Length: 159
View 1 (cartoon, rainbow, N blue to C red):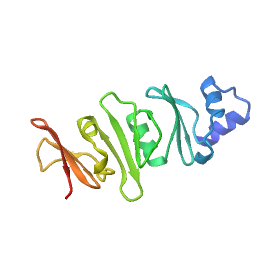
View 2 (cartoon, rainbow, N blue to C red):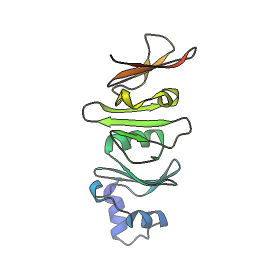
View 3 (cartoon, one colour):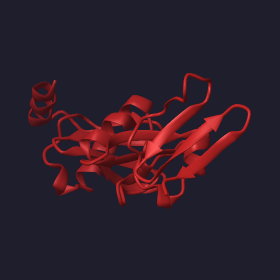
View 4 (cartoon, rainbow, N blue to C red):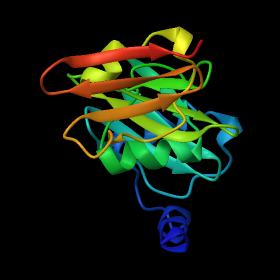
């Protein structure tokens, strides 16, 4: 598909307004574009060799490939930059992606995301069924959050 997009662009196919806007707001760290600009969630995105670039009502943001893959899967755009291994996304109930080479890339959302405190560090797991029950949990570098339909979220820090 990349060759087709490049061929059409080189042949003089006119760009949409969104493409012109993206061309004027380049993040050179992302490398060459590998997709056209397309709508995503509450904004627009374009994929590049080293990540994705987003335009939303909150501004311009970039994400590395692993974070961008989750953004595409959930069809959402960032609310801010990736800072300290965490990037928040435009979802009413709360949504963050935690990513680092040491911990991997994990989505945290809903009540578990709302209960997150910085002392927990980065997520080290995706959400999973807690001890075979209907409860859900996410592990972090310094603890865990377990959500139960009867008790709500409980934050446990490692000693």
